[in-house]
Image (cartoon, rainbow over all chains, first blue to last red; front, top):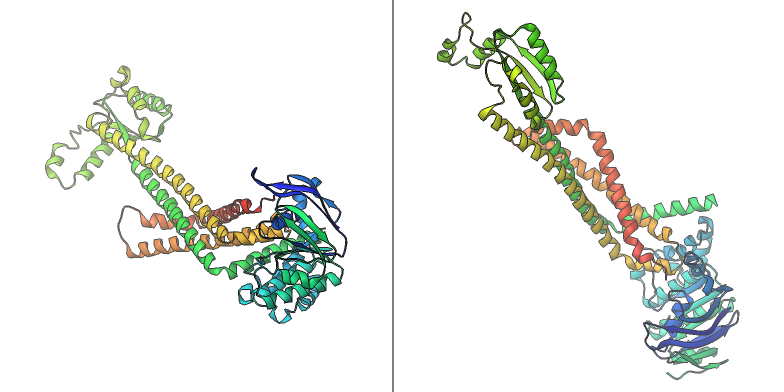
Length: 226
Length: 309
């Protein structure tokens, strides 16, 4: 489902942010990428969303080889992957409903589809009563759940979440993690980056550890000490 | 596929309109800015037209009189007239008979009995003349050169009116009007450029304020036009509103000025008439300019945030 083959990323001729990283994620897997700040997690994330291009190496996601990807195909690629960011990245002048609907709009869904799907997804993330609120009226955890709703509303086969709990207090962090687990149970491949050891140890999933831009361990049921 | 495109277009327009209302304060600030520049521009255009009209009025009064000896025959006169008519700057030639000259003289000096007594009908010393009107008072010299030719001069009782001090006065008026006309056009062009720059910058600022939105939409996989579209719709609305308000302001100002009957450098009634006569042209031009500047500015200003890496 996700394949990184000897991927290296160097910024401005400095030390490599990622060095010959290889990773293979099977469909429906839940993989946690751990590592300290600056280890290269975010770089990996940006490579997957094609915000950055690798200096060398191969990336294939959902059957799309990034090497042959033209600029005008990038929007199509991004519509196929669900993405959750640490800083939520919600559209501040749209309501909760509109933020989620936006993801469907850009994919060209009909009005009927939008009307049918959005409330259901908001129910999954537990925000049905916040439909008409604006992001500024929500707590951090609620915002992140809107972001997750937006990421899954198109029913992507892959969901990547970059430190989704990074800005949340523990209670809200758990809400978010539980939603991610639920989505994974429905059959979505989830790639989660975090450096929260409590969450990693609770989930009991495959854990890939990155240190100084290199994969240093990859365990089927991993632990993490921050 | 067509339906699909239509849905997108509909959503773009709707989102643009909704954003306009949700960002109403930003919209008001931008519209105020655009209105100011469009008002100044429109005012400058009308003022220039008025001024140019006054100049035309003034220059149309400039003429050259060729005074004829009493001995000149009708044939000679007609020949001279035909020759003068061939000079391309000549607009019209009027023949003023001795009798007409006397009548005009009496009218001009009606309050001056002493001067009046100097001429009488029996002893009319005033010459007949050909009064030449021209298109361009800056090019009187060709006429002067022609009438100063020896064989033509032989027909004249005295120097043409375009001589000596009078010539200098006419030349300086002609030069000044020419300068003002050109200055008017140059200032309008400068105003247009400044307006475009100010409006462009205003829109660039409003988009800069909302660049996060653009970046987020891009990350979610929206196509560039789907992101840009609502901004273009929004700024087009700014343009239309600014155009309408600026027309209302200028119209109002002229209406007030003409009702106050203030005498000033400008012929207010002409301005007002000019405005009414060209109202539709002004409406179309202002709104057109508002739409084009608004749409192009936002399309250009959003570009840098939409570059895909």
